[in-house]
Length: 319
Image (cartoon, rainbow, N blue to C red; front, side):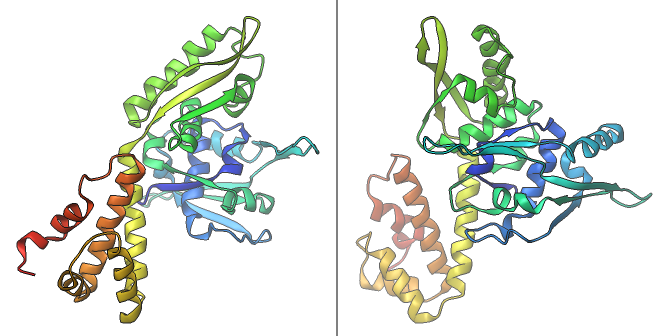
């Protein structure tokens, strides 16, 4: 099963009440809605999603029943207030949930979404965060899941500064919880740090960003990339690009190849060799994406043309 999920930043920056199993249901629902996500959303569309119950990684029927019971009353709290206006409220995203299992057949979970949640779940115009469902399903704590989602929003910037009360809210904690920063650090930060490093290959640390007298009011997180997920994301983007190239005509393909080749010093014979088959065109695009990814990480190949030429196999050809 494809495992990369797009979570709108509007949804990611809400306070959520879900338990770990309920959160799994939410994220699997998002995965199944991925093809409907975009930058223009039908707010009237009725969204119903069905998936094998085995996807949620829970086999205890009592816990599944309890999760489906509670999820239809769980609220998401949003706050989009600005200096000039206050705008906040609650919404219950799941209006219906059921489980169906038959002897000798796989069991299924079906959920229906409140149409007022369509923008939160589907609209990507205000930015989105890509996360890995398989990684999330390996996490035991809902706080670790939320930390993973939030840190992934800022991983390319490598740092994230947030007020402590705001962070507690995003983690679903009451502001009165863990009044002692030492308790919060031990039970939440250190616990999630260990869990994410072990299961997600996502590493983070923190330092005090602001204080009021002796009270810590803000933290700065230092984040290191989850490289495994980046490779999967790159593969998915490459696949999309290859599908796109396959839909183009010969003239359009030639134009795309020449545009890509402007980044490198290829000979005319090498360019013509690439253009002979769409498989070679797709391979060029795949390698070009890898080069761009390396550049974005600050680790570009020493000689980009030589890197691409060797990857394409030019060194074995007499061109």
